[in-house]
Length: 312
Image (cartoon, rainbow, N blue to C red):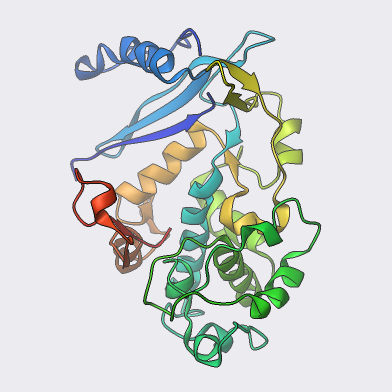
């Protein structure tokens, strides 16, 4: 399988600092110079990159700074939030349960979570895990209910029944973090543990992703971690504290580094296998990477044809 995939975790500078590393293949001879240009162009203090090609990690390297004030270099081991890339791991973890015959993508969620309710009886009775992880349940975002909230995962799920739908199930793409959180919760329930334990035991441990963790508190305890930045009105990078989202974990709480993410990429590019062991069935990997729902208005991006969302 001829493939070239990049895993990029960006923070946000000003100068490029290329970590010393083995020489790149000839076709990537100008890669370090390219990265220096990109950090300057996007005003990004630092980035860590992994490149997987033909079943091998051919580059895993840090560029720029992970902490501007302390002048600490970004490395391949710098842990930083991967945000909504977490959703891919949630789907991968669910796929391991599908592989083992414990879940079905197209069964109503109530088969696994009997107390689950949405605002309409039809949605309650018919919404599936595939619907949840494809953003097509009919529920709009309602993000204000969870952001900076102290509610637990279960308390948030109980409140979902009170939030009005703005479409029928499967009628419209509506990005929804609450439904991803619920899907991850279902996975933990079916596994007899939690979403965190399911992801750790079924995805992270088999892939050897030892530096990946689930909470900002754990991120900040890691010696080699990145500082968050945002651009101010003068387009200068300023430190910005991370916001914990533990209850919403399945939708975006994972923290990782380029070295760990390269292992995930090796699995994805090997049709769901890692070291000759099937982590995800080929059919489920295809479902993850195939459009399940069209985005609402392709004309917003005239250079793209019919943008679609897969499973995570």
